[in-house]
Length: 279
Image (cartoon, rainbow, N blue to C red; front, side, top):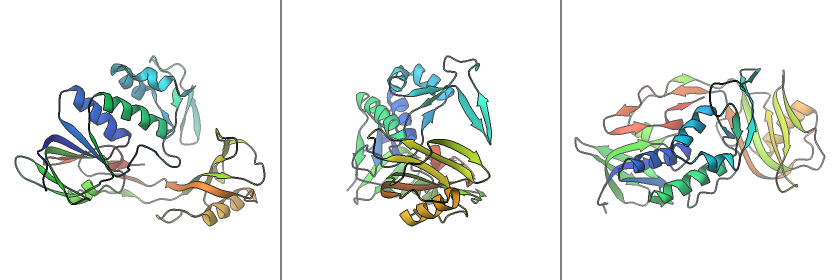
């Protein structure tokens, strides 16, 4: 079955897809988001803050106060291993606003909903064909959307990018880190460290039971999702103990892999966000 059509279909309802949808809606464009998650909930750790230029753009859209009300300001940033003081930047927002991605997405989703942007949940873009007048976008439920343009905001493993045949050159990972939210049987040292063992941190979570932690692995991990065993091994290598880590509600891995799409557009198909670059 086919859809009557939209001007733009956005694959992915994360921060990039939501922000783009809001921008297009403000311009009077008929846009729809296709998002694989059935809700806006986000499990585990992702991005953790907003920088000055992003806050300036959100201010231009009249929604920056929504983010400021929920975040924490920090007048520092990092470059490589250096800590930079950004308190004198020539901006109204000379700081990093610490705010979990889950909250960032929720605020953007509420804004997009206010602008009447529809979101098709529980579905994914699985492929497309395009011609001179538009794009037929195939969805995982067997339906097809017709649009003038398709924008892939569907992450580092972007189906849109791969289907468009766009190369993704770059560098493989030389180090990897594990992020987790879990309970610990032993109390760890609280804080953040960067040294010859990599990055290590422990922070208490809002519920007072779980801990948000990060640790560099001794050897770069595989591309698959890390296990509780991987986390324990990394903790022992870094600290000499795993602190009795247990009951992890989320475990993920990120690396220093860097890749950038060879082009951001192929005909009527475009890429944005992590679909276009990872670093």
